[in-house]
Length: 166
Image 1 (cartoon, helix red, strand yellow):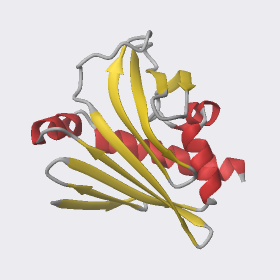
Image 2: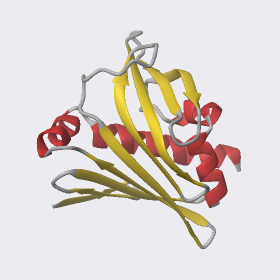
Image 3: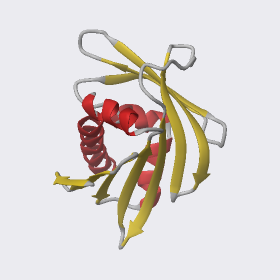
Image 4: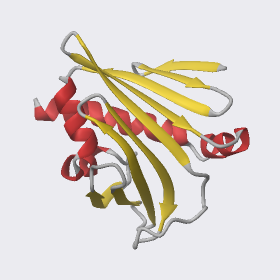
């Protein structure tokens, strides 16, 4: 197991999972809201310089979160996630795969199984994101593609966005 702390983030890489934890100076309800509502997610989710020109969220078990990340060069990556559990304002679970613009999944990367826990800690919020994979090879592939760094940057964006909202 390897640990890495940077930018207020603690990252743990296990055999089949990646766990990233960060505390935000914002209330739990607000963090849950900006993590689950499309108009907010589109403002912070993508690592810079990517943007999110399309973001649709149907926040319910079985509902789909479908979004597009666009690079400065105009390259696009579509992602389709299916929610399995919503516990307001404490937890969201979903599975994710790359897809096309019609939300038809593809196997460009292995499926990821996310559980995002949102804890109130004396008026601040601790966000713990656990991403599970079906094999060590699947985890390694996404780490090699920059998953850890990309998500860390998105959480940096989230911290800035939360400051704007307060």
